[in-house]
Amino acid sequence: MTGRITGGELNYPGIGSTEHGPPAGVDCRVTEAYLGHGFPSYRRAVLGTLSWQLQRGAGLRVRAESGVADPGGRVVSGFGVGPFRVNAPCEVVWVREPLAEDVPQSAGFGYGTLPGHPVRGEESFEVSIDEAGKVTLRIMAFGVPSNWFFAAGDVLAQRARRHVTARYVDSARELAAGPG
Image 1 (cartoon, rainbow, N blue to C red):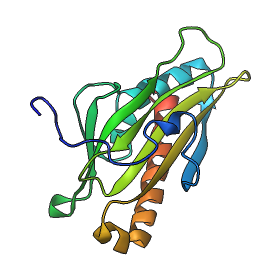
Image 2 (cartoon, one colour; image 1 turned 90 degrees about the vertical axis):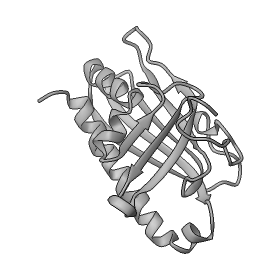
Image 3 (cartoon, rainbow, N blue to C red; image 1 turned 135 degrees about the horizontal axis):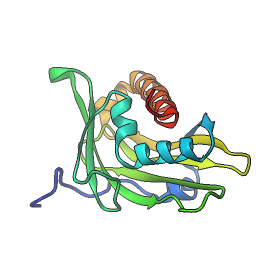
Image 4 (cartoon, helix red, strand yellow; image 1 turned 30 degrees about the vertical axis):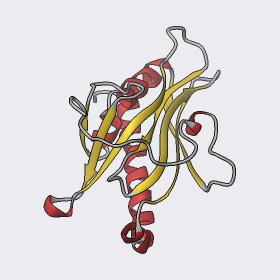
């Protein structure tokens, strides 16, 4: 495929389901975190989430086909050092843009795994603001190890996922707080 940063097709059941809930019978991890208060915080967090700043702020190396999350767009994020780098190719499966009005809302995106990712599944990042102005991040993820090697290291993979998720939350809080 010319012009694509990575090949292959989405490789898991329930494509797009993080937008409305995981497929039945699938173990799903949900992390929710308070980010701040008010529409300026909400808009900063959403902009950073939709433009890959959330991943970069979490310490991941990001190569994306577009500067913003776009349905069908591909991204390869990676963590580790040198030959110990794990690349995680994904395709954006849904995007919800923020509304222009200052009303309770949520925005974000979900992406699914492509061949070469250590997991087969999906992850979403959604920033919300409620009627009281409370801004929260919700990360939903489901998946299974993509092969025997990653399945054998599942305890380490679970620890790595928790670590990266905590880094996402820290990054989102920094985005919401703004320059400072």
